[in-house]
Image 1 (tube, one colour):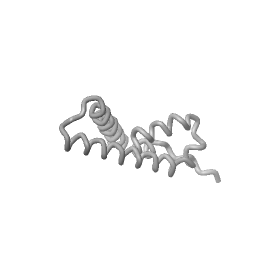
Image 2: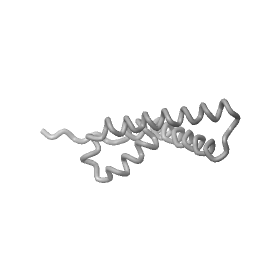
Image 3: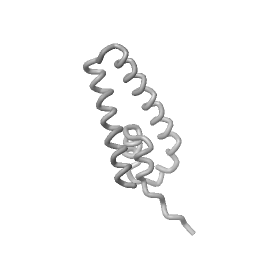
Image 4: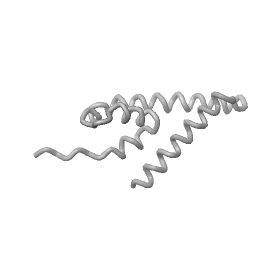
Length: 88
């Protein structure tokens, strides 16, 4: 499972690299618009994920770094966070 999460994180970071490259050197017209739209949609989804999982980050020592990683890699980072031990 860890390998799948790492692959997902790597591919997501690669996608953000494509979006950044498209901002610096725009591609041919239909592709530039599609890449920008996909980047905006994915960023919006990652913001929603960050807001949805904000409560589970309160107990973490590096909350802001976790939030930044959720903005970058989304659910792949959320799934890699170990679950807290239940208090009985």
